[in-house]
Image (cartoon, rainbow, N blue to C red):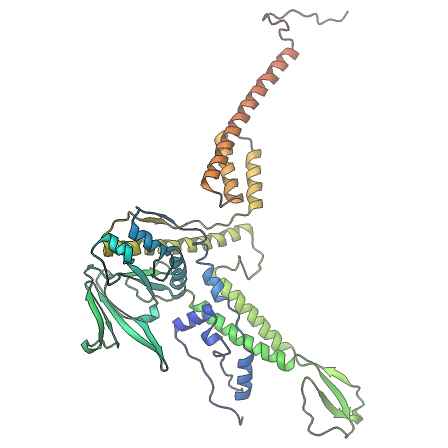
Amino acid sequence: MADRVNEQTVKVDEYTLLRDAYHGNGIFSYGKGIQQHARESIDNYIKRQSLAYYWNYTRPVVDATVDPIFKDEIKREYKDNPLFNLFLENADHAGTRLQEYMRRVAVMAKLYGVVYILVNNTEDVATTLQGNITNENYPFVTEILPSDVMSWKLDDNGAILDFVFRQVGEFTEAGKQYIYHRWDRETWSTYKTLTMNSDDVIHQGVHGLGVVPIVQWFGRATPSNVIKPPSEFISIAQTNYSLYQLCSWHTQLLVDQAFSILTFPDDGNMTDNLTIGTDNLLAYPAESSKAPAFISPDASPANMLTDQMDRHIQEIYRMSGMDSVVGVQTAKSGVAKQWDFQRINQRLADFAVQCESAERKIVQLFELWTGETTDFTCEYPRDFSINDVTESLGQAQSAIDLNLGSNAFTVEVAKKVLEAYMPNIEPDIYDTIVKEVEESTAQAKQDSEYSNLLNHASMLQALGGDDEGDGQDEPKDRHLN
């Protein structure tokens, strides 16, 4: 093929693929990541790049493992502290609340398998607490992606002894210019190059914390000595990349072959340079005595690509464990669906544990920097089951219909109804409703007992009880005259 050039290949590292697959940019924008086929001309390759588009399934799958955890404000309890209050409202010194910062970085931890949080402090620390409050001198957080971790040293227990990472210093015509930070248990320093020679020092100092102020935030349970664990979403990102290729081939087939071609007899008067295509005709000898007609390309290649695209989508949701929730409609028994939901719930709960642990460690380093005690505790959710309101109400009605005669049982059923029907109800309103249900249930039981006594007395009277009220039953003649 005369216009054939060297085959175009796109090679990216794991973290770049994960980032681009999640955000839909980089190799997934404007056909940058499209691979040239072995039998494809450069002109056709460029055309196919211009037609390329990206179906992003990576982002919703990753977000589905994070969003439920941060659906509501995380429960936090702490002792009132002015500096810590400032930290909660502006954790990164860029105006981001701690709640929002944890939510944003949780996506990175889940996507990449780990993210590191540096808990740093301002350089101009005042000598008084009021001075620090006035000048907003308090610790702040900075996330470090695993792709930016350059080197590290660990002790025998997996604790970090030395940590080197890079950070973008400035952008120039040559591209990103990095600077390199090194932290150990007593000192910190910043260098112009990774060689970290004494001539390359930009800043340095002593923090004296006795620990490296770096928090490991894993996407799932991982030993602390694993600095760069594999991402659980790399297979999904790769599959999404393959789907990206299939979509480009499929689109090109539709563009080139979607329209029928007219066939027409040629008596020799037609032009010789007629171009065959979807917007003109294909001539055949006039003596063939065939009538003009439309012919269509073979649809099997497009159908094959469609099937493969559907299979890729199914596999993405299967690998994510969400095939029974979204994307794939399959007939499953109720028990099988319960097992699927249980698996998803457990994955969410496991990651919630990692988020809670990371936040506690961040606050511990805040206390170490400031010497303040906050008595901080946080509680991340553990149950992410989704209640079907109609089903929950039906189950509640069935439970009430059992008529077990227990007030406590009725009240507990009412609580379940509130949880399903009004999950975000205010605590004081919830308590008021429960109290009213308890009183109503007790009153209903008293009314029922009183009604039973009245019915019992009526039955005694009907069977010949004492009509006069003297306690003596008069004999009755049971014979008819």
